[in-house]
Image (cartoon, rainbow, N blue to C red; front, side, top):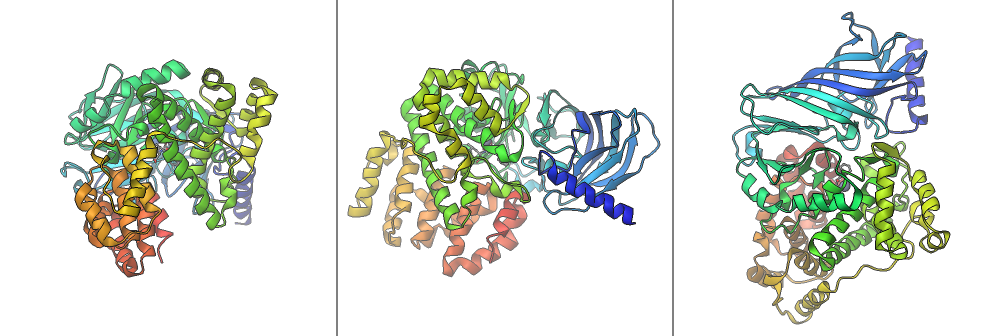
Length: 605
Ligand code: BES
Ligand code: ZN
């Protein structure tokens, strides 16, 4: 008994001293290289049952293969092609990290076979009732593995620094399609059985699976959209520029190495805007507007095909290398497609997000989370990942571009990706790269070390948008003179968002907002970004007519970026606190993915 306790304790301490503080695995001893999955999706019991065969490389004398798991029920472990079960041990469960699964190796072992099933409350998975889908006919299942949730549906070395190839067989209900972050089927198979192949090595956070009543529509020969049949026509229309985005990204950063690029339109409860699963971006339906106005999100997820999926942050402390680079690429792509003015608007909106995040983190005493290089050890990585990685990371690259020039910056990025194809990278590798490739004079003015390791915002030129100037004037005219914005109908969504953000700073009376609502039909806006801003303005000013629509929105949409600030604002209104708490527990929460549910729960009184 004592021996067991000691071995469990040593497991724990070793895991924390490894290169990735969020994985129990010891890749320097035994490291996985290939995964074969065979999964059965049990919609009645809401569990996935299956086997995972993990191929690995081990150093001579390696004693154990260590995997990450969370809530998995391990039925059996066998080694190589031997059918005789071998003993395994599960470490002490950690609320965030889960449990280490330790498998003792024999000297010649090269693969393990694990028979297992997921827990009904597995954090990566959301099982949806038919009513939560557009068609309302069939259930839906999807996974969200980033940052460290893959371990709740696959026993795996769940670290972004460990890559493996995979093959999978998935059995779902007949009449439904199954899709993964791999080469995907385009048509239904009557028996509900599908096969997948990902021949390029990827980290565990990019493992993804979705299954539902889905149809495929092509955009061109190598890009397309999967969605429920009800949503597919609108999605094909909104995403029509994807082939041009892909061609532009290739021209800037080198050939797209993943074969196909498809987009899966998720049910509205999906907790993120988008997720860059290789070959198949998962995207929230809240970007479907009919006018392509929110598709910079597609450029973003597509850009991750280079920044993130090819050159991958080594640990979650280096998250800004994934997201800051991706925001830069996203805006570069959007500028090529739609021009400088358009990219300027995106930049100013992003800068606004950055300033409010900085203010919020300062208010909460979380100043350490304003560094680019994070210190997430001992914490849930999800708690430290915020707009800083995206927008402060972006601003650093923008400052570099300012001094190096556009062409040199494009070249620098292209070189960076080609040097790190299918590799993990640390922040320190990036600063080394800069010191070799960028002149000391430029580094001295830009000060990348200060950007990366210090809190707050170093010196930078403030983003500006000329197109927003008249919009801001319109907002001021409404605030001061109650004049309705004459340009509204001709404004694109970014201008409208800028107008609404200006109003969010002001205090206005309910009757003035009622007048604005009547003129601009804001409560009925089909654009989720505009609706989101409008709800906040309305709540802050006590314009309660929005409540029925807001209730409906929070019931349908689980995108955390919207849900969290809305519920926070609701809770700030004394008159709405009890109602909000009750609606959350009885109505909204049961429809959210664990990622959103968990974040909102922390706000609850
Ligand atoms: N990879 C992220 C989503 C993510 C980050 C999931 C951290 C889990 C942990 C994705 O690429 C992303 O950044 N999505 C953004 C959209 C983007 C346009 C800023 C989102 O979901 O809002
Ligand atoms: Zn991203």
